[in-house]
Length: 108
Image (cartoon, rainbow, N blue to C red):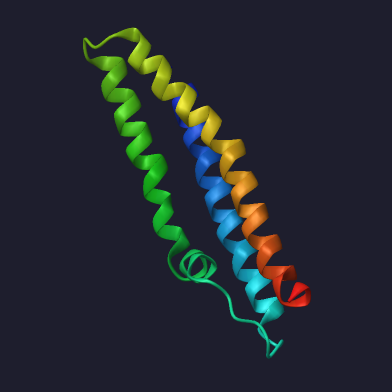
């Protein structure tokens, strides 16, 4: 189980890193547009997105503690499922955020 958790956490960290870089690149691409006024979320992701790397660390700690303690096995399976399902959700959110930043000013 430790290897599985480690691989999922590595995938989560990779998605967070590349997603933050993608949103930052899309904002840099639009900075030359005088009508560009990003919302607070893209600015937060660009400026402090790497702080989100704490999420996989907390998830790994919670999952490993649940696996080693005498809690219900459903709790550990639930934590594992949350970690797995968070990857496609994060990819979708980063892509939507970056696309919104890239094309927002041309729509309004």
